[in-house]
Length: 245
Image (cartoon, rainbow, N blue to C red; front, side, top):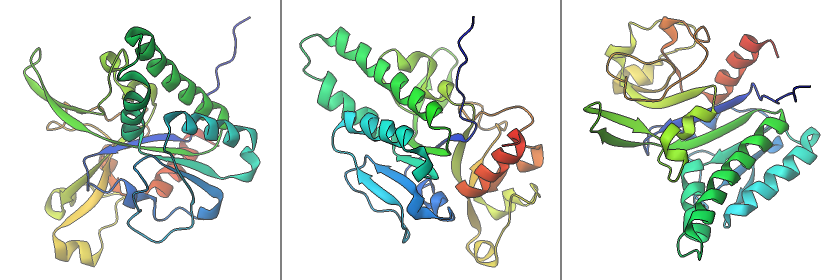
């Protein structure tokens, strides 16, 4: 008998460079006091007032312990935010890999604990938003620049993004470039027109971004929805409608 694998349809990896709007995308989440916000970036403040139930992670294993508590008490929360996965990876390496007596075993645990985190997210069955920084590197094989979430060990070969069904990238695009993408998921304000740019989520690859790891079900977004509002809550609502949750 095949064991049933749990899938969390409300799981999103939000990636982007520093200052691209990853944290800002969380602003419109309602009932914030029912959301756990796990801060792995030494207590970095969010760029807006909020009521999230914040926990500052100072030891990499704390995140796994807290996620297990969330699974055990899932009725008490509406969702989970991890900000950021990149800094959690760095924390884990600094605390448990660098200088380890058995480096091979330490790297094996690095991979296994990411798998543990992934499984806990699946068991949670609540919306989960994971933020991560990206890094651009030149691929000598393809002779192209590629942008992805930096990681090490065996995770690097396939990339972190392969563990997520939906990956969106935060971008700052000019209004001129965005005007050809007209959809109800993209609303350009008068202030944004005055500034000449808008922070958005990119949901689908374009000819100029083939080196990125944006992904999602083929029919999750229309071509006109290649760029949408930088709004994590609106994105979750779109996912809920798509999966019929």
